[in-house]
Image (cartoon, helix red, strand yellow):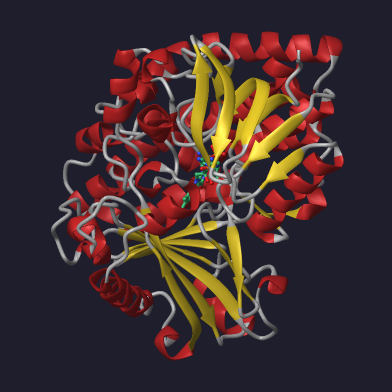
Length: 509
Ligand SMILES: Cc1cc2nc3c(=O)[nH]c(=O)nc-3n(C[C@H](O)[C@H](O)[C@H](O)COP(=O)(O)OP(=O)(O)OC[C@H]3O[C@@H](n4cnc5c(N)ncnc54)[C@H](O)[C@@H]3O)c2cc1C
C-alpha cells in the first residue's frame, strides 16, 4: 500500500519550510512535524504585552541565496523587507558600518597609531569583499534564471570561482585570529577586535563574509522574523502541505537501511516514502533510531563528539522609551558593543556574561508596529555557553531541568545585562517595563538544538570535523536526507534555506 505521504519532514524551521514548499510546489504530499508550538525554530519570535521579540536570529543576509530562493518560490516581495545597518561600539570608538572605506577610515581615526596595520587588514580582505557581488549575482541567477540565462550563470559562477581559487584557498586555510596576530603587532585591542568574533578560530573566509554582509547585505522582515516564518508556513499550507505542531519525532522505525515511519510524541505513527531531518543530528543518532546499527557506527560517534556553535543568552526588554529618545542612542538596527577586549571562555567564571561582546537589536526602532505606541522592543544578546556555571546552576545537562538556583542566576544575569547596556542606552534601567531572559537552555527546550546552539556545527576551523567535511545531505539511511544548518558548512539562515531547497528539489524529481 502507498504511504499517505511522499515525504515527511522533521522540523518546521527555515530548512523544513523551504523543503516543504519546493515539494508541495512540485505536487508532492508532505507533512512537517514540528516540536514547537509555532514554526520558526531558531528563527522564532514572541509577542509579550504588545512588544515583539526575536528569540534567535535577529536579521539575515541574502548573499545571492535567500531572496533568490524566496523569489523562485514566488514569495519574495521587496516591500516586505527593510535593509538594516550595524554599528560597532567599543570603550574607544564608535563605528557605523556604512561603507567599507568609511569603516576603514573610522577605525584609523580611533586608533591612529595603528593606521598602517589597519590598512594592511582591510587591504587583505579587499579581494574577497570585491568578489562577493560577482559571486552573489551569478549565484542568484543560477536559482532564478531559466534556460540559457541559468546555464550562463552556472558558467559565470564556476569561472569566477576558478579565477578566485588562489584567494579562496588563503581564506579557507587560515583563521581570522592568525591573520590578526600577524598584522596587529602593536595594539592588543585591535588584535582582539579583528581576530575574535566570539567564535574561536573562525575561518578567515567567514570573517571576510561578516565584513561584507554586515556592511552591505543585512535585511529584516517588516512583520518580524516570526512574521516571515508564518508567511512561509501559510504559503506551504496553501499549496496543500500539512504542519503538525507540538509533534516531536521521538523514533525512526527502520528496516535495514530504510526508514519506514516516524513515531511522534503524540504516539502517532507516520509513514512516508522519503524523509528529511532538519533537527539535531546528535539526538537523531543517540535517541531516535530504533535500530542504531542501521547507521554507520563511526559516523554516529563522530556526530556525537562534534562540537556545536556556542549558545547565546538573550534579554527581551520592553522599553517605555519613544523612538525619538531611543534613536540618538542606538542609531542603527544592530549595535555590537564590546564591553571589554576579551572573550571569556572559562565556564566557571561567574562574570563571564559581563565580558566580550553584547549585541543590541533595536527590533521596533525602524518598525514601530513591533511595539506598543510610544514604546520600543529591544533584544540584548550575550555570549554564554550552555555549560556555564555547571549548566546554569541546574547541575544537569537536560535542558528541561530547572532549579531555584537557575532562576536566581537568570535574575542576576538579566539585571547585569540591563546595567551593562547603560553604556549604550543611558537611563535604560528606569525605563524597562517588560523583561525576560532566555538562556541557551531555553533555546534547547524550544528547538531541541544541541546545547541551544544557534548555527549548527562549530565554526572553529581546527576542532570541528563537520565544518571541514561539508556536505551531509545524504545519510546512511537511503531514504533519509539531512537539511538545515547542520547539513552544510557554515550554518545559518542561508545554509538552512539552501539545503532545504536542495533536499526538496532532489525529492521532488
Ligand atoms: C541568536 C541567534 C542569532 C543568529 N544570527 C544569525 C545571523 O545573523 N545570520 C545567519 O545566517 N544565521 C543566524 N542564526 C542562525 C540561524 O537562525 C539558524 O542557523 C537557522 O535558523 C537554522 O534553521 P534550520 O531550519 O536549519 O534549524 P532550526 O531553526 O533549528 O529548525 C529546526 C526545527 O526542527 C524542530 N525539531 C527539531 N527536532 C525535532 C524533532 N525530533 N521532532 C520535531 N521537530 C523537531 C525544532 O523545533 C525547530 O523548529 C542565528 C541564530 C541564533 C539563535
